[in-house]
Image (cartoon, rainbow, N blue to C red):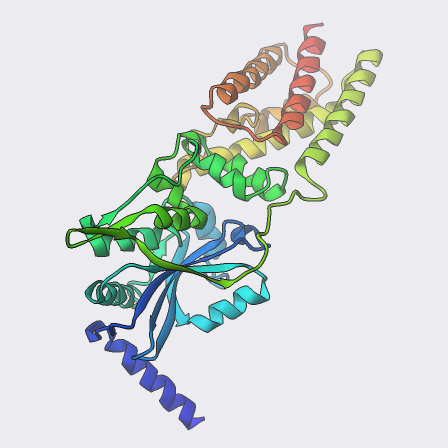
Length: 389
C-alpha cells in the first residue's frame, strides 16, 4: 500500500512541474476522435487530445467532456443552462479500453507541429487541467469537447494555422447537423428540437460545424500549417486505433410519430362522435389545452429565464401556447363564455403561421410534430365551429 501511495505522490509531483517540461523530439500531439455510442449524449461522438512522449514515458488523454452526475445541483444547473463540464487527464489506455468495451471506433490525427509547438500545446493543457482552471460552462453548440481542441490549436499556432472549409459539401444549419446525429423519430430528438429555438436554423458558418467531432476530424484533414515559408498539411498522419462499424442513429420502437398518430386517430374519432351527438368532450379539451400550456410555459421559461444560448425565439410556442395552462379550466364548464370562441380562433391562426415559418426555414419542425400539430388543430377547429353555434 505504501508503494502505491509513494507512486501517486511521485506522479503528482511530476505533473506539478509539467509547466517546465520540454517534450522530446519524439513526442506527438494527437486529436483523438471517437465514433458515436449508444447513449443520447454519446450520439455525437467525442473529441479529446492525446500527448505522447516515449522519452518521458508520457501517454495521456486530455478530455474536456467530463461531467459529474453526483453534483447535488447537476440537474438544476442543466435546466438553467449553467452546466459545468471540466477537463480531466488520465492514461490514454484507459480511454481506449472504454471505447473498445463500447465498440466505438477511434482514430487519431497526429498534428504536424514542431517540438516547440508541441511543448507549448502540452503546457497549455497542463495549465488548463489545474483544479482552478479545469471547469467551464458547457454549451452543446458553441463550447464543448470538440470546440475546445479546435480553439487550442488556433491559440497555439495563431496565424500559422490555415483553416480550410473544403470539408463542407452543402450548406446546413446547426439543427440539420444535430438531426443527422440523433434520429428525428426518437423522444430525445423530439425533446431537444422542442426546447431549442430558431437560432439553430441559421446557416452554420464553417467554424460552427466544428461543434461536432466528425467535422473537427474532416476539417483537420484538409487544413494546413505554415512552417517558416512552407505550407504543410495540418495532420502528419492518421491512425485507426479501433476499427468498429459506425453506429447509425435509430428510431425508438415506441416513437413520437407512432404515439402522436394514434392520438390523432383518437381525437378524430372523438370529434366525429361529438359532431354526431352535437356535444363536446370537456375532458379532451381540458387535456389538450392544459398539456400544451405546460409545454408552452416550459418554452417561455427556457427562453427568458435560463442561460441556454439556443433556447430564445422558439416558435414552438405557436402550438404550445402558455396561456392555455390557465384557460384550460374554463373548458371544463358546460356553458362556455362567447369570448372564448375568439381565443380559439387566435389559437387556430397561430398554428397556421407554423407552415410558412417551416417552409421559409425560419424554424424547422421535425416530422414527428406533424400528427401532433394536426391533432391540436382539428380539435380547435371543432371547438370553434361548436362555439359558433
